[in-house]
Image (tube, rainbow, N blue to C red; front, side, top):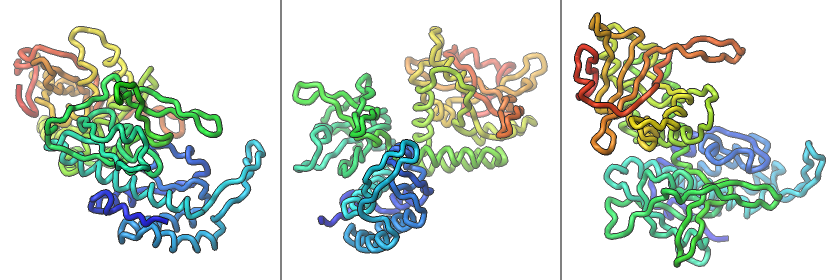
Length: 446
């Protein structure tokens, strides 16, 4: 059995990999498809482990590998007798309680332990690597796919070797390594192209069906490639069409937003600014929103947390005796769908709107709407987020402060909850925003 030491293979300080692994919860699953893709960023599982004691033993071994550099041989020697003593070893008969079908399944074995060790450590290291790369994406925006070129390399992973895409290319949401069990690929961040060609996935990402042994079909995102003049598909293995690091960051970002929801608005706004500045988590929020927004086909009354009011905006509102119930910014699926389907000439381009969390985090200006008769803020209060649009244009988005939204409680009862709801948007003439009887600047400038 070969010796595996992934910490050296990936050249990554283990701190971020450990952070990724340790934040996971636990989940018992029988079939590997019961916990799908992004869910692995939230919980640790091993298929066919239905006992938390055994799951804890396996996780403890992986913790030791990450924290203390335990090799696969050490991992195996420690776990094998433990798992054998607890009966999770070898083959056993399993009865499907739904169909009554009896099948033979593999529990613990040296081969399974190797897969568990390599898959979990590689995923943890790659998630940590992704976080590190996102933190320097401003100075190193070009990401190059790197495959290990030897006799065990999958042909299409070999074909991806050396190809360069921008860090924010949608490809990385589906094909950031690892791209399958025992995949050894990685990604390198570059400050410049160095004469190489920049690829992009525009119009090249398609849904690709993979036929499983049991006859079922699993759909993954595949990239159309030209290889030696022929059309080929680069597709992750079934269950691997996601980005572990991005899923982890999105989970952390959404958790932060949830925790800040009930905090004092001024405190929440300052804390979120610090979190975003230190972690680069805005990219995860943007990716999470982009994925959700693109999936909306009709309104289901869904709400999405997409950011926080800026500290300057909260201070400006409070100086005018406007005290929001929360600093959290929310968008409704109906408003997203309207923007996506809007065909008007002055509509916000969809590719710009999909970056909503970034627009809210760094607008050109935020204006407070005034009542032209009294010169006081409108009631209820409304904000205009102003931002630049390619082509020397200016866009605006309207936000209602403490807009009352009907929310259904667990009991089924509907209650009205005040929220900061981002609503309509369009391209405007910036000169229209110069009237100080209509607008007051809370942040930035026009």
